[in-house]
Image 1 (cartoon, one colour):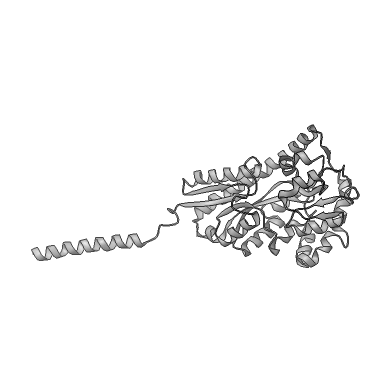
Image 2: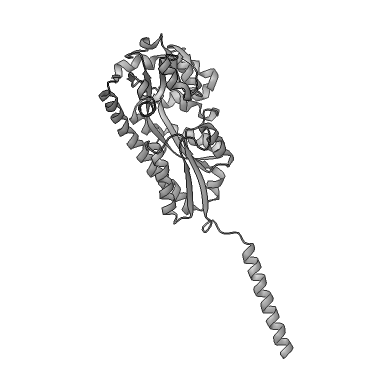
Length: 340
């Protein structure tokens, strides 16, 4: 009896050890796992977009009870923004408030001038279910990126040391700087003037020295906060929304529980809306600040904007000239949806 009892105790101890070993070998469930992510953007927290990134990170930590924490990196501290997009796609960076990268053909339609030139059109196209929202979401999925929504920090236009500028004829003799990496913008402005491709870090000095006369495709917020001392004229051509997207690595997204996915998407929707409405309000305030400082501001009427649109839409214009670069399928898709 004594021996049998001892044997029983040994079996019990062995069973307990086996249970412990088995439980230790089971990985933590998605519900209990904690995360430490990096999230980056192009701009400082003094802007609506930069502040939105910090608020998003704070809300996610609060709403997940600390399960997801994020380290925020503004002003491209994690690298050039197109590289950050690549890193999110590959999984070496978790999240970002980063524009869809023009390095990929999937996003070529995003950077076409004059597809969208009013806030109403932006909301229609980029809210969930909008044709551009679906377009970007599809491109992101192909690149292993989870698309969580789009922000517009303001419409881009003309700014420079010479002017005023009302019609395309007014800048035909000026040296124009356009955004490096937006090939369709270059095609458009080459039809108007002499395009100078220089790095953004050199723009201030180039305007100061007269190496360039103006820059196109810079939102009024960017111009006011970074180039106000070398800006005497600004025109709201509204050639393109200055867009950014909230994205994360798709495999990381798929690994999360439905509860965490819901929190992230709902918080993203909230922050995207706040950034957009704040940016729309700020755009008007920056125009007023410029006027108070003596900058000549030109707000185009719909009639005055027509010649700018015509250069894009006329046969042989920007859209036709871009067919070889980005393909008939993309151009036809955009034209079909804009007509609706």
